[in-house]
Amino acid sequence: MSIAFSLHLLAAALWVGGMFFAYTALRPVAASLLEPSVRLALWQQVFKRFFVWVWIFILILGLSGYYLIFFRFMGFSNVGAAVHIMQLVGLSMFLIYAYVYFRPYKKFKIYLSEGKLPQAAECLNIIRKGIATNLGLGLITIFIASTHRF
Image (cartoon, rainbow, N blue to C red; front, top):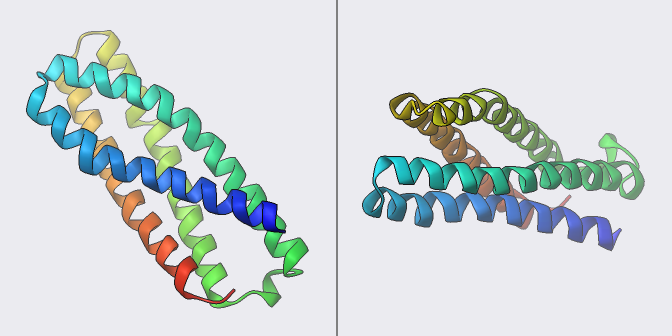
């Protein structure tokens, strides 16, 4: 149980922490120092690496979370409202991430490879909004996890 719980916490902290860093530190610095073509190329490389990790975090979160629900607590009827809320928020975060990954990020890469910088920038703005939404949801989830009994 402790390994599953630890993996669950680590995956959540790394996903949310990565979004926090990207949104509050990397994004403002890149916007203030880099011209658009370089900034877009930077984000392409950042997403290329970070999004692979997000898929791994999602897999770990899902497997460890449902393992805990079914093998530690013996089903959904034995967990409190906090777990149900975290599951709902987690699924919402996954859907937002899947949308970002398969729609604007996919277009972002295509536009960038074709040299269509204004269109790539529009996609980046959509990605930014998805990350901001998921960051807020992730912080809420961490707050719920740290203040409620399961």
